[in-house]
Length: 317
Ligand code: UT7
Image (cartoon, rainbow, N blue to C red):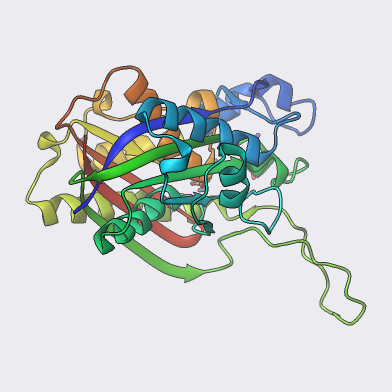
């Protein structure tokens, strides 16, 4: 026994920031951002916290699932841009929902939503969980350097969630990690110890864009092939591909290499930018609420990011 999806939800901040507006802060322009990344606008928090986004997405998912907060057995959250290091985001969500179950966070960067599913699957396999809430929430605007045009134009804020219940909808997964802390890195604040003598590193996201790009295309293609081969399926048998939305060119390369029709691939990058671990559940919720998912549909999720890590999952709706 593993799980099936009982409901999904998402929450985006109100404030829409179009590309042109970013030119007020850094030397950039709409044409470069559209052509190189495929983003037109993103949502950015003005008063919302990461917890607000997580709670909003969680409430939507609970409402759709018909599950009450008191019925949850676990809440597991993921964030790279939480409001604080502790308590865990999941604990703040638990309190806001009025749930009583245990709650904790995982740290797995952009592929974290799939890692949440993987973690939840282990709880269901133990047989002592009947309903689990998973939520990914990211306030990337808090952790990017707004003086750095090579990163600040890429990201957006948002959250996505799902309520999982007993079932057989989580068919297969693959996870790869190739440890590397130089290509993509978000250091903590350096603190103020009078004894520590190493020069401080700025506590913002640092990324080697081209290396990350190569890693992204390679890992999506490898993970999806491994997933489908393992399941004895080809892309023809899959109804939807939901990939991490980091760059429209990455998605285009992956689509070409895997020979996937565009209409089977979820989108979101143009409207939301890269929302890190929230991009996959936001895209899934959009498909779900648009009525695009039918019972029995096979869906491939795939994501990559800091770690360097990547994960893919085959689910049945
Ligand atoms: O979820 C986390 C995973 N992250 C990713 O998957 C990101 C992967 N990487 C990428 O998407 C791309 O590498 C970027 C979008 C980050 C950069 O695109 P690129 O085609 O690799 O550009 P580049 O870094 O080679 O820069 C090309 C030029 C440079 O100018 P010169 O040196 O050729 O004069 C940059 O300074 O573009 C310049 N540039 C910009 N120009 C206008 C860099 N950022 C900007 C900008 N606006 N925002």
